[in-house]
Image (cartoon, rainbow, N blue to C red; front, side, top):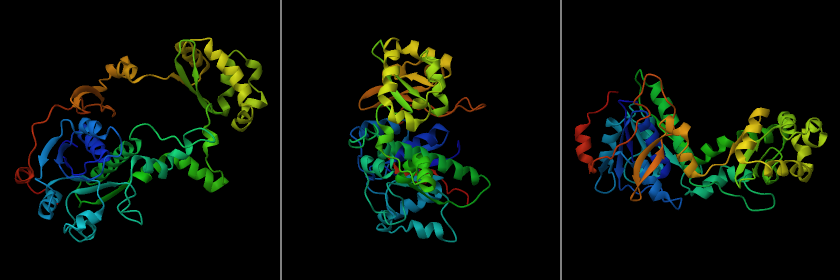
Length: 372
């Protein structure tokens, strides 16, 4: 996307994440400051927003972007990312729906990232990180039986929606390589989260089985974290077909075909017996000894790492997976987090500190209208 101009109007984390990812792949990202937009939905929003925005070219609209400036942006940019409902712009004299449904739609792709979508009965509803996770419905699967749902840590809904939006924009731009008008791209944060529950939806539709917290009690019949001798935790995931490997791993081949543990439903009925077998085995070993034994048995297992350990991971560092950015007055390491492309050693793009913001009018005067 080396020749693409992406204008970030939205100030929320989802808009910032989408713009950052498009910039990683070479787009010129211009962030319009002071636009209000999505409220803070997470207690560390400002610091993370600064980390996302680091290196983006900044412009100042001197207040809200007016109708005239917005029309110019739609003809001079390739992508505009926003996080407000269509009614916000209608009240300012810009009917985006009519513009994009008309005979001569704008050049730019308008990517709207909102809690419940630009259309439908929830188009005007406000959302927060917590309500977005709950409506997804990710919270239904997280937590312990008989207790309240447990929200995912951090702004998972907002950041995940940003990834979805960036992928959708890139796919749409790819389809327009040979020309074509812009489009109104509607990204619902609720729908982005619901994509992670596809299996649950299919199970409900065909079998009438509803996913509930009892499937995610700790420890579960399919996965769990186990303490080890050195005070660390390892996480192991296994399905029915892998129980024989677990039995061999703990030195109990006589249990490979034990009916109590062969199927997840049966394991749910015999959790205490299974824990009595597994927990002592883990407590006799260090975390790395357990992982090595699991690898020998063909079992997926990993040590649960601290953030500091991840930042110092030799594999991630060898791949150049971090860059230094400034956020909340500190220099911090920030993950690059996208794939590597053969023949494009400059991608994913690393960021450098951007110059001070300049007036929006100056940017518009610099950019010619894009070809139709």
